Length: 75
Image (cartoon, rainbow, N blue to C red; front, side, top):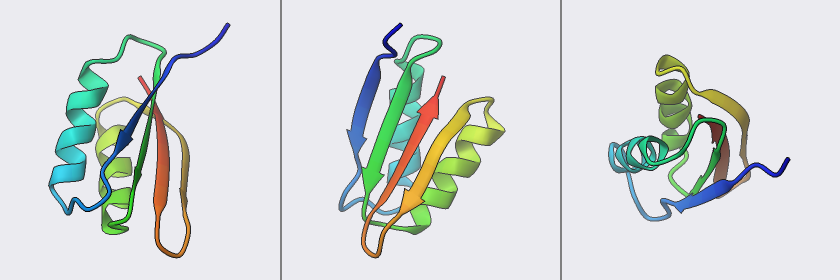
């Protein structure tokens, strides 16, 4: 079974915008689908991760490089 993955790029956005965009994108997903969020404002990674975990979503992957982050969340 192929899991559909939606992508969301929040590059250039600072909090709370990345979390708000992530929340909206997750609401549009069907159960079992995944959302990949990428961006460059590193504090957003922890905020998005915390939001996802506190709202019953599964964080499949959370990683960062020197200048970017990537998080995959399953609904």
